[in-house]
Amino acid sequence: MRALPLGARVYVLCAVLAGGLCAAPVVRPGQDVPWATVALLATVHAVGSRARARWPEWCSPVLLAGAFLLPPAAAALVALPGALLTRADRPPVWPRRAWRAARLSLAVWAASCAFSALRGPRALEALEALEALGDLGGGVRDPGGPGFPYALVTAVAAALVLGLTATVLEGGVLVTAERRSPRAAWSGRLPGALAPYLVHGPAGLTMAVLWRSPYGPAAALLVLLPMYVCACGFVLYHRESAAHQATIRALVQAVDIKDRYTRGHSERVGRASTMIARELGMSGDRLEALRIAGILHDVGKLGVPTRLLRKNGPLTPEERRVIELHPEYGDEMVRGIGFLGEARAAILHHHERLDGSGYPYGLTGAQIPEFARVVAVADAFDAMTSTRTYSRARPVLTAVEELKRCAGTQFDPRMVRALARALDRHGWHAAVTADAPEERGNVPADSSPRPPKPSRPREPSGPQGASRSPEPSRSPEPSRSREPSWPRGASRVPETSRSTEPSAPLVRAAATGPLDGPGRSPAPDGPRPGGRS
Image (cartoon, rainbow, N blue to C red):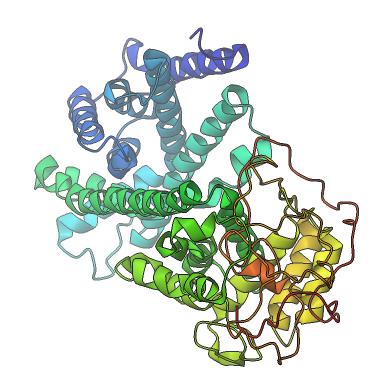
């Protein structure tokens, strides 16, 4: 208990005392307690809790059957052995077990009281009478009690009371022990926590009916078989999800290790992509897939030679063409990862442009997958609002204006508007991402965003040929018209990296030097044409 805050210790102690008071009536003289039923249900619940400790709620129908078959004080005892024997995931062990026992005992006691208050025992007796008549589904009603539909309603109501009580008590521990806000501890947990009890209620009622039937407890235990199968599937699903997340983290860390200037960029692009997706009305699996797409959009950088990523000085046209293969490398690398789904399209096409001048395939308009159009906007926005050793971050409002200026030619206007709305609601905090000014890789010698002098034209030289400075096109012909680089040049390669420095404020002071964003006429000595980059 010493490892817990004082407030949490007091809270747990009060819960244990309350649980003891609820179960105390069973020791009073003259109480007719069916101890055999209590012992058998408690044993079944204890075995079930140990069999699948990762999700012990699968045997909640046993607790509900106890709430339906036993008085409230006796029903509270059913949860004790299983709660006390369940493994604790971290210390202190016994306070956690005592807390779990108190929480479940109080929840079962509350469910039993609710079932009794709703005349559930009379409904259960009516069902037993109908079963004795052999006409449970034929519409015959017991004159002394309500029929089957009412029994089902009371069972579901009691199950919801059990789930609500357990969730509310658990939220109290999160507030006192982990210092979470009440809103985070309760409001976000209730819907998901109560949903399983809509199934547990009918299952517990079925167990109670079969328990008192001529077939006895052995038949009642068969109800737990499908619940156990569902629990195994639930645990496997979570293990698979954890493996997916570990795979994603490993890929992102591999990119970060290869080019230290990209650290943090992938996670921020995933966050910005999620903000856009929510504004577009996406949810569920598609929202998660788009977040993964943003995180993995530059994983193909693993296929680019490290010497190009860390080259000091400008890239040759041949080197730039090698770097521009990274979307195809990324698509090949994740081809066998089935759970990515639509995220693969974003990895392959996030450098395409609406006007067809992007790469790798020069797709136009609606030919570009929706996920790729979202990630392209998020990628460019994070690049412009992130500070690096060679350039300052642009203010959020300036970056949004640059995106709007490019909408319709480079970016999907719908995605740009969605990002602008999300930023108005939630804001954005860019981070300083370079490790140290002296540790430059393939970046321009001048850290200022000013264009080079006319007498010394130089090619952009981002860490991967595209993310650190404005990019020229694939074609080196000087006869083509020049094209500015922001935010386009920023969206082509992972641009940022994590740092121990504090994050930049929401809106920074304007960077010194002129902006040469898309839509502006570049200086005569600016980067070479950027038709494909």
